[in-house]
Length: 402
Length: 120
Image 1 (spheres, helix red, strand yellow):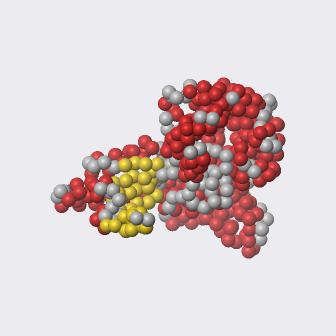
Image 2: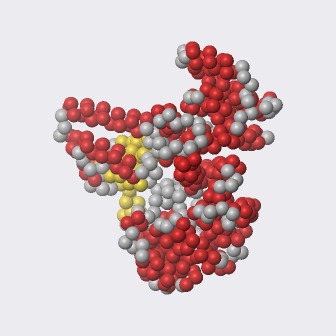
Image 3: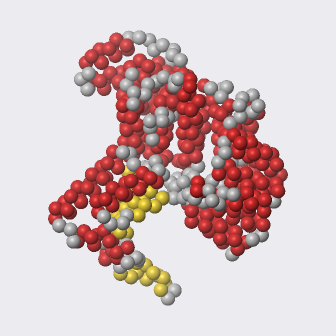
């Protein structure tokens, strides 16, 4: 029951905030008021039961909080205006547009990436500052300050609750999707802190992306992003052992995979692919789907994966795509062919900061049978990674070869 | 991304030769820096450590672990304090460190904390 109330509250949060901002302006004050209203609801609803119209209830309570704040600040004129506004019945507004406009606002390019993530989780996700601080493992005061600065920035840049004009919209949507992708990715970090708390971020990213997909069902990349998250998160239970060790895809116990997520992701892709222009998220999701649908690692349809990487490289070229394609090349045409392709990345400056080139090289050298070189590459990769479980995994693989 | 910004014993040695006014300025500088990092929403934690002369190093000697006096590294190279910041980029972490170096004029180390998502 309480979980359901919480889900309902989180779903209503952006709608209520949207309604408030439309009526009163002042995003930052409205956002605080909505958080207080959510808190009041979380305390009262489980005891008193759900109100007839939960959304109106929240809008009314949040508006009252707003008036109280303004009164406390002595903004008389504002108060009178608001008191008049409060007489109006909360109109059934275009809630979906508001939620979308809020997402665009929180992911505004004027904000730094950490601010975009934090503000999106609070204003659209309805998470409290404490929850967000815990998820990112920073002190609550730091997160509170980050959110408050993000709000200041929104005010000073006069970012309004409007959908971006058509010519900018595609670019702005890409930023929104990237922020959701980063939230998801952050949830994949299990190097420190209880793993469960981090997993909450992947759940939240999926929830928000699902919401975005409901608002924009015709956008292929939004559908692709949702599918990618579902098809990736489907493997979560198999991805690490109870003691936190990573399990590579090929060694995962496939019966632990979340079949519901796989099915949903594949359905989503089937409905999307071919009906809209193809994009990087759809292609990455399609690759994840090929892995997820293979009954065993040996039965993976690598030629299909290679073909998808070739398209991805055309749509969205970059060294990481080439790197991943090299793995597929190795699986289809043999590890030497994969190593040859990796060689083309050796002088790429963009690869200097990542351990992935060495990690893949190590794996392919191991397949070729050059164990000494493979060991060296694993150890080099271990030195370069910024992920502790991954470092352990790489050292373990090196140790296995000595 | 989290980074650790570290100061070493050489900084403490440098301080010994500084005058009172500079010391007062330095304390003010450090307080302001912490406040700024808190205000910018980047502060994770910061601690100062006692002088290396207060350290014990536990070593494996003749098959057993034994506590010995003194720091592991040379006193000059021993860690004496750190900040952990959560910032948008490495460049920003280096900016923060540069602000400290501009003031104390001794080397400061910036190193990533291992909290990136693994990509297996």
